[in-house]
Length: 154
Image (cartoon, rainbow, N blue to C red; front, side):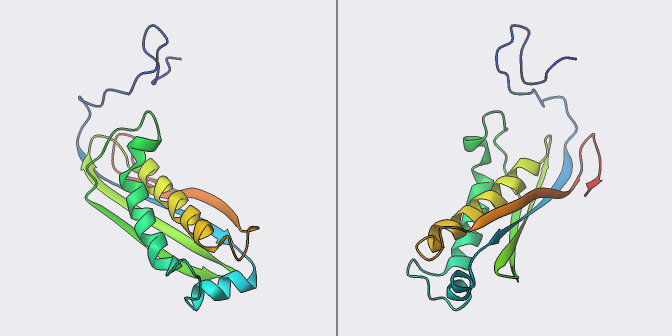
């Protein structure tokens, strides 16, 4: 088996996507953060001293998606066409969903997953003075479309 991220001399190598077909590619990722009832109420009621947590997490998720290639060594820099972030309240926490879209030669799964991770980390950062025991969990790819490998749905 040939490893895709090593060249013939076993040196790290970014995959050459130059000959790949350009297609519309969409990836959806989700994750959750759970916290104490007090931290949850403070966020929902906009009483966190650092400011509006949910709105800031949305901006962070979008920014994180756009910065994926700066954070993950072998990711290609992508010109994302759209990043959408949705946050819903769940029992003592929040579920964050990021959808990334591009017309390109490589997928956007890492961009969606990075967006979720950065958004959840932002919630943690902004509310950690209230609750240091928050737990981020279940960061996962929900679906992807486009490209040679086709459709995937969890």
